[in-house]
Length: 109
Length: 116
Image 1 (cartoon, rainbow over the protein chains, first blue to last red):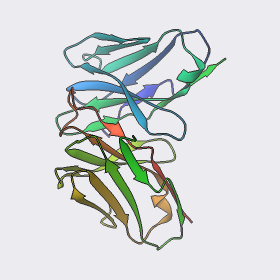
Image 2: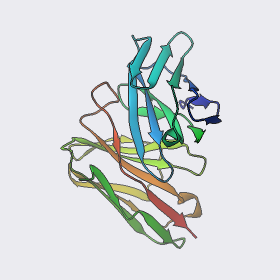
Image 3: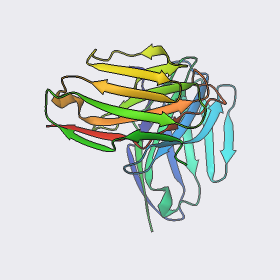
Image 4: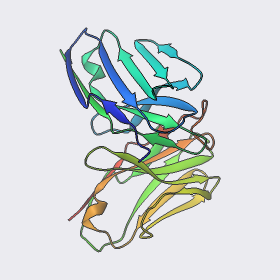
């Protein structure tokens, strides 16, 4: 299967803490993308990192990419209750986006 | 103002029935998709259309037939529904083909299909 995997599968933290989610993938990529899915809603694009980039920031989000290990991490700093959602990494290629399993983040107020 | 809208949001139907899910995007995008998310939250692409032409057709039973009357619409028709078809179906769109920078995929809110 081409699908990647997020790790951990579920994470529960307190508001204000940082949350780190890891993603491993199997095939070569053009880019790696992270999406958020709130319960009962569609996916929303968060951030994209190209294969020749190692780190990228967007607001409270920090993404790293290690192509030698075929892994990426998403760090959410100073988490808020509103960050509670499922997070997906997706491998971007020339043809299509291949999503990982997703990871459930719960931020407790 | 909804960018990608799909209807219905919820659909409960009996095995063997035929049903359709409609999707429209007002983003002016050329490419539209159907994704399926199963009960374990796996999200998998089913079809992709670019300017009304089919470009990706994953291993999907031919009971599933997408139709794109114009580039702003991509409907999904499902014949002879089976229990295993129960899932959330997401329509999505992007400016062009391929999962490249600048080609962000925008998702609809999903259609929850339950086959009983």
